[in-house]
Amino acid sequence: MEAKKVTRKVSRTLKTRHLSMIALGGSIGTGLFVASGSAISTAGPGGALAAYIGIGVMVYFLMTSLGEMATYLPVTGSFATYSSRFVDPAFGFAMGWNYWFNWAITLAVDVSTVALVMKFWFPHIPTWIFSMVALLIIFAINAFSVLSFGEAEYWMSLIKVVTVIIFLVVGFLTIIGIMGGHAVGLENFVYHKAPFVGGIPTLLSVFVVAGFSFQGTELIGITAGESATPEKSIPKAIKQVFWRILLFYILSIFVIACLIPYTSSNLLGSSASDITISPFTLVFKRAGLASAASVMNAVILTSVISAANSGMYASTRMLFSLAHHGNAPRIFNKLNTRGVPFYALLGTTAVGLLTFFASVYGTRIYSFLLSASGLTGFIAWLGIAISHYRFRKAFKVQGMSLDNLRYRAKWFPFGPLLSFVLCVLVIIGQDLKSFANWDWQAIGVSYMSIPLFLILFFYYKIKYHTKMIPLQEVDLTPHDIASKKVE
Image 1: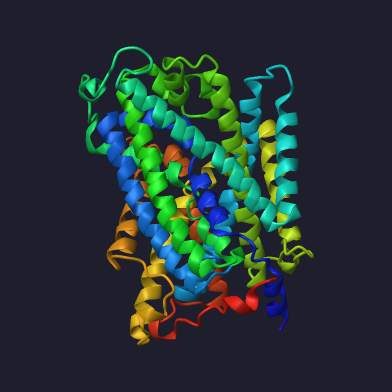
Image 2: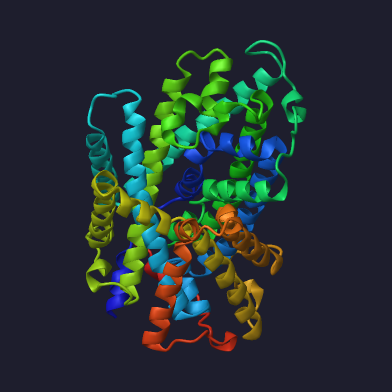
C-alpha cells in the first residue's frame, strides 16, 4: 500500500513538446557546436559523416526499444527497472547506480564548464562564483516542480534548435556563394586525402566522439514516469527527435566539411573554452557576422546549463527509483507536496557539489571520477538493448500478443542486436592506442567504468543470490497509467 501512495504522488504533467525537446536538447550541445570539428579533422568529411550516420541509426533503434518498454511500463526508474524485471535484479541494481553516478559527475563537469564559458566575457571574476550560481539556478528549477524543469528545458532546447537552423541556412548560402564571397561547393570533400582519412581505426575513434555527442537521448525513458500521456507522447517524441537529431548533426557536419578543410587547425577544439575556433563561430564569421563568437558563446552557455539541468533531473529520478525498489537509502524515496523527490535532489546536488570542489582543490580525485564515469552512458545503452531483447522474447515465450503493446519497435530483433554490437564496438574503441602500446595506466583510466559496473553487479548477485530470470517467469504485468495520474 505504501509504495502505491508514493507512486501516485509522482506528478504526470510533462507534455509531448516537453519530451521531444528534453531528448533533443539532451543531445545538442558542445558535442555538436565544438567537438564536431575534431571528428572531421580526425577522419575527414566522409569519415565523420559515416560515423555520425552509424551512431544516429543505432540511437534510433535504441530509442524505439526504449519507447516500446516505456509505453508498456512508464515508470520513473526506466531502464534500471526494465533491467531488473526483464534480465536480472543484479543487472538492474548495477544499471541504476551506474546511471546515477554518470549524471551526478556530469552535473559537476557542466557547472565547471559554465565557469569556462563565462570567462569569455568576465575573465577577471573568480570562476567558482559562476559555477555556484549555475548550480543554485539548476537546483531551484528542479526543486520547484517537474513542470518547471520541463518548461526550462523546452525553452533552452529551443534556443539551440533555432541556432542550428540559422547555422544551416547561413552555411548553405555560403556554400553556394550568396553569402561570404565565392561559392566553395564540394571542393573540400576531395581536398588532399579527403573524404576518408586514416582508415577503419580512425573511423572507430570518431564513432566514440559521435557516441558521446548523442548521449542524453535516453532521457526520454526517464521522463516517461512523469509524462501526462506516455502512450501517445513517447512514440511521437521518438519519431520527431530521431529525424531532427540526424538531420541537425548530418547537415551541420556537411556544412562544416564544405566550408572548412579537414586539415585546418581550427577544427581541433573540443571543449567550451575553444569557442573562438568553434566551427559554428568560424562559419558565422565567414558569412559576415562580426559578433559570432559572442553569440555562439551565449548559445553554448545555454547548452551547458541545459545539459546540467537534464543531468540533475535524470540522476535525481534514478536515485528516487533505486530507493523506491530498496536499492538505496529509504529517505531518497520521499516526495514533497509537488511530487518532487526532494531528498534525492539534495543528495545528487551534494555529490555534484563535492565533485565540483574536487575539480578545484583535488584535481587527481576529479580526474579519477571523470574517468570512472566515461563509459557509463554506453553501458546504459547496452542495458537498454539487452532489456528490450529479453522483454520481447518473454512476450513470445509467454504467448502474449504484440497487439498488447501500445508502441511497437520496428525490425526486431535486428534493432537491439545492432545496438548491442555497435555499443560494444564503441566501448572497445574508446582507446585502442593504449592496447596497441600496452599502456596499462591509460587502459585503466579509459575503461574504468567497466570494472566499476561489474563490481556493483557481482556485489548484488553474491549478496542476494540472484539469477537471470527465465523468460517464462519475466513479470510482464502492464502499467496502469490512469490510476497513477495526478490531476
